[in-house]
Amino acid sequence: MQHARNAEVRYMPYQENNLWQTKVNTVGFESVPEHSSYPKTGHPAGYSFNFEAGRVLQEFQLVYITKGKGQFASERIQLCDISEGTILMLKPGEWHTYRPNETTGWESYWVGFSGLVTENLNTENPVIQIGYDEEMVGLYRKILEVSNNERPGYQQLLSGILIHLLAYLFYRERDKNWKDKEVLTKIDKARLIIREKINTTISPEELATSLNMSYTWFRRMFRQYTGLAPAQYIAQLKIQKAKELLSITTKTVKEIALELGYESIDYFSTQFRKQTGQTPTQFRATCQGKPNS
Image (cartoon, rainbow, N blue to C red; front, side, top):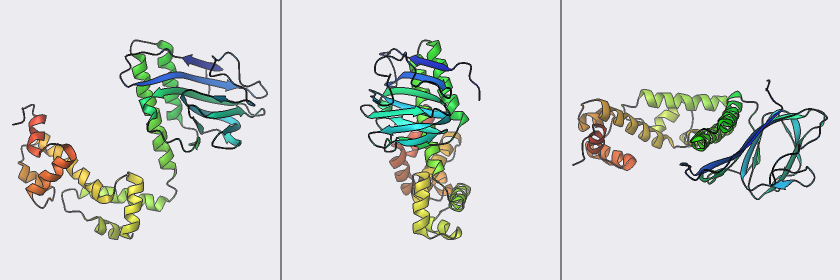
């Protein structure tokens, strides 16, 4: 892993017309060699600090340690060791401090941000271990690249990349919690069966039986993995398939309802409207560019 510079740091001005109401304030990369002083000087007020005193930020920051080892402490966690592959989630208004080990140094990326994207962040754990991830590094590098150019509309692009980074972090954090590969394999198999049999009346209970799992256990594991109960997952896939058929075929609503295994056209229409806010007929008219009657 090589970098052209020992440090790259950007502090961005605010743009009033930011469409996403999310602002990337600062982004940077820093390589701290072993047996060198830390932190380096030259950061603006509000960002600079020393390890003993720590600091309090007025924004969120995600600090990604990509090489080396160090220490971290905050109001929520006592002084602990951190290493390559660690993400630090720093909250505004919360005291924290960190530093690399003198014998190893470290390389780190960070991005500071504020705005609407912060409202739903899970900040319970300030130390997240995801391991070294080239895609995560690529997102930090992209934010640096865009911020260096400062082209028109660059804050909107930065906000989009930041949301991608946060979503990817959420995905990695959830995925690493699945240690039981046998259960994971069964959940994946269940999803495959559901997709293959989307045109039939699929029973979650029968699915569990076919996978040699109790329904209670299957339902709980399925929901933890997908975010939906099996019945909800099946219902959403059926509606997605119905939307596809309504938009690209000339089949009647009744034919589509029967094809997808619904008990009646009325039940199909009720479920479709519940999920989409439109009747099947209204949805088809919208896809064809026709006004709803």
